[in-house]
Image 1 (cartoon, rainbow, N blue to C red):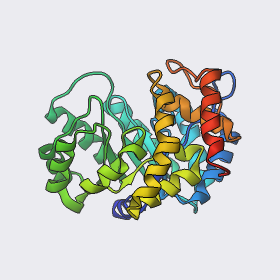
Image 2 (image 1 turned 60 degrees about the vertical axis):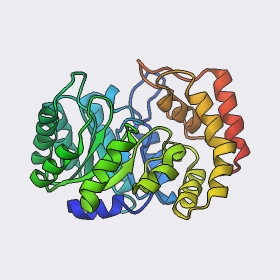
Image 3 (image 1 turned 180 degrees about the vertical axis):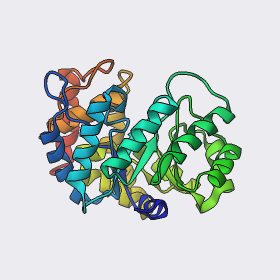
Image 4 (image 1 turned 90 degrees about the vertical axis):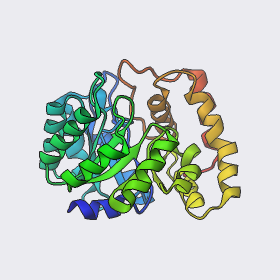
Length: 303
């Protein structure tokens, strides 16, 4: 798939990041991961991101990463495009990106580099080196220590033809507006704040109508219904789903740091697609919190 073809696909609909399946000992389970993807693929997400943040990229070994991406690509071939997560140091990110390309993924989400702060020149060099190492499309994720500004993105757009997407996980409206007004349709723009549904209408007004939904992992029908409500400016439907599900969901998610991933795995288990526990340093929801989540999910009906 050519980078510009991927750009068109990413701009066309809801995106999601499947959780990664582990067994009770914390080892990757390819069989249940494949079943999860087979379940989610027909619901209409325009692309799935394997081994992303929700997929616990940060806790995978290189060999496990290969297994996750290969399983995703093999399972979803001809059904839905797969983008892979890639991150860490520049050389590590290059290695992950090249492996994803070798395995047949259609593109990569470049997650923030590891730990250290960096200047705009350093951030640009990081992104440029990763883009130059592969031929497929790259989406850069502005979050945490990666805070590219409009000037830097404009330079990268000139230097990196395969840099086709920009995902915002900062929530800095001023910065997002500067980037969008400066770059126009050069990029596909993705909303990446957790939980994205809460910000979806505001981001659409900014010119960012597409976002990634973690809730799609276990409530795919609800996630798609909400996306269509935003796309159609159906504020009554949005408000009903926000009041009845998303805002109470946030109350559970916000109880502990790291629950943005943990609550998704809990939801998947309740939905009948158990992905196993999260890996340290994350922690799973308590039994009480799982019961609260199950009540919310059951109230939304069959998915």
